[in-house]
Amino acid sequence: MQTGSLNIDRLPSNKLKDELLKDTNFTEVEKNGALDEKPANGISLLTIFNQKAIINFHHSKKSCSVKSDLKCCRDINYYLDLIRALINFSDSSEDHKVALKQLVKNAWEGRLGKSGYNCQNTSDEESVRKRSILKQLHDYCDDKNDIDGKEEEYKNYLKEKWNRIISYTTSANDNIYFKIEDWNNNQSVKYIDFLLKPQIECSSNYNRIELSHISVSNENPTTEVARGVAVRNGDEDRGATADEQANSGPGEGARLTTSSEGYTTHHVVIEPRLEEKEGEMGSSLRETLSAGFSVVGAVFFLFFLYKFSPVGPWISTLIKKKPGEKRGTSDDESFLFLNNPEHNNHYISYNSISH
Image (cartoon, rainbow, N blue to C red):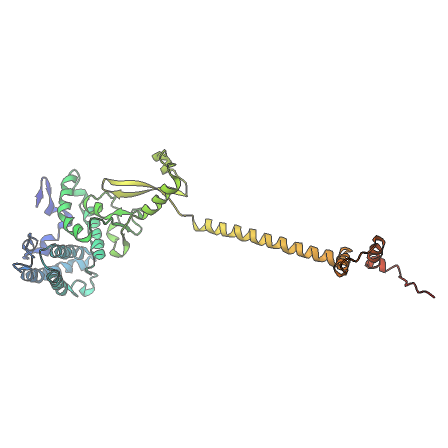
């Protein structure tokens, strides 16, 4: 296939296409209406495709296995996922669609990963998305040098390549994002934009990325945080310039994501760091302990005052004294004087006895 000056079939990403589809009836399978329940040609078409494609895959896998290259796996999975999408959009009953998908599953089950070749094809939608992301990453980086100056033609090709799988793995209300571990600064990227209009820097180790490194979510992870910022700060950020956002401190920052217009920047607030939280907890604990020590110190002081000073006996006298009973000032002074240990060492009290 050639689009303008861009030769699609000569792209590095398509180097296995002819080998994998050789002598198959894939062009018939992907024709509009070919897998409809009536006239019921789907079973025979898919049976023929499976038989030929399995043989082709095993031939290709030999060279891929020697080089530990999973391109054979990525490419055959693309065609199997595309067939699932074609079945899903066929004019057929649900039972007929399930039967056709099961036919494909049974034909390929246990054949992809034989002889130590690490290749799987699970049929759930999230697995299809992850496989599509991984293939697009490798294909785009493989093709990047060949599409220089032909980007618009390449985007048109990507629409044809991915539109049916996108429709199969998303709905109108879906807003799917993904991240790749330790890649692209762990930034969140919009699934559809990445398949149709990729704008990435291809690092030298992109071919080391595997399915297990990819995580998919139904909403941009920055959305909830940014929404909270808008509620709390109101119009505070409206006057901020791009430079101010770029130079923001550790509590806030600018994060790069993608949108239908390309990459955009979200002003977000980052949660307090663990060390800051621990510092706050430590400060609260110190305040609590300080208050506790103050109370204990006050109790000991009052106890000492009560036990070893004239105040203690005076308080005891007040407690023991009957209501309404009064003691003269001189009596109180004499009582305190006699009960003071300092005076007891030098004076003897006498009881007056009448003779």
